[in-house]
Image (cartoon, rainbow over all chains, first blue to last red):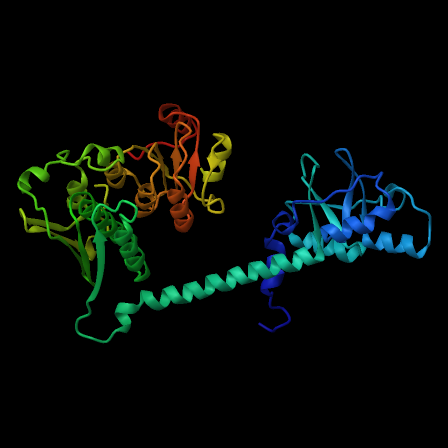
Length: 314
Length: 114
């Protein structure tokens, strides 16, 4: 492709972006009875170069700084704006692509156009060449940002392939404070974000996240805190959640769905329904729970990355 | 159906992530028990609840839900909003109780997961 027939991103964007996206929607309007002598102050104070002239709900014209300069140069007497405004109001629809605006600016040589709704024909905003440039720049900046993010994600996604070793293990540790409901779930949420970046299967990531979240909640509700350690290998994610007390007296009982020792206020928050361990069990490929009263509890969760098809809602 | 359409049709007020309402809603789940939602909701679901504390945001983003609707005019706590903004998770409020809201969602074609 030669540079001549290659369509630039800008050319694409003027068709993609709608006028409504770049127009200024809080429009300052002027009444037709306003005097020309007052115009300078309005334009300067509102920092605008022109405004639609509205008689009630109806747009009757557009007045601009060009009209004001002409009035000054002609040294005419003061008069209502309605006598000097352009009455030939050219409008654009908010749902039209930007290219439509570009064409009209070229064709009419106006500094601004009123933007109206196609159905109701109500005034929605005003558009200047500056708004078009700003809109394009903003979109280009977003594109650029997205591209950078993509490059970044791609880099991390191939992490395991890029590391040259017979065995690669990543270890993540999150410290969980007991009884701190404000920060509860942060560990699981950070683990989820990290695994996502590594490009693991979304279903696997969700299962690890849910199992970890429930385990983290147990640390917050029942213990003085503990640690979550996630060992990530290409074939398996192994999460170990450990605390140092108080420990579980009857492990068989807590594994029963619906069994809970959570206090009333915790239940009121929507926790402690006796479903946590059950949820973990459903997400895990393998789960093991060990506890000694007075010493602490360890929960081992293994999730096989080959189990991708298994849903956490099974 | 897109979230924006539902917001319009049910007259929901959006409290967070106002620029992230373009998502397709895959279904709905109504519950006030967080573990229940973790276990049984599905990606892209709308969650209907009366819980307003910040942990609902954690649960919703764990499950990649499309958004949360708070019923009975209940307003999210400030921390909940802050977190929702950060996670780009839309929280909406309605004056309807759960039963009415779910009925209306159903008649609009938003059904349960099973």
